[in-house]
Figure 1 (spheres, rainbow, N blue to C red):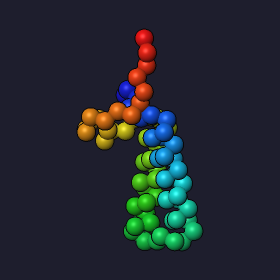
Figure 2 (cartoon, helix red, strand yellow):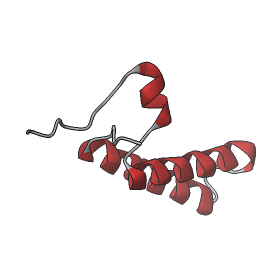
Figure 3 (cartoon, one colour):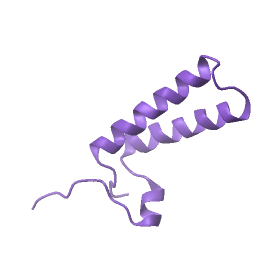
Figure 4 (tube, rainbow, N blue to C red):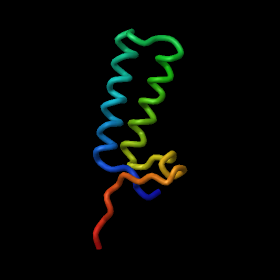
Length: 69
């Protein structure tokens, strides 16, 4: 897997995951929507850690800066 996520994208995903976790664990969002947010937050953290988003490959996006040779 070639990295396709830049640093800003990774930071935004981790922050969103933290917000989702806070909303769920504080009881602000409950039920099915709360579980969906927690799962989505987990996916955001996982993709941020490995710097790869499978959805980006499907749509041809790449936010990772090019390495200079």
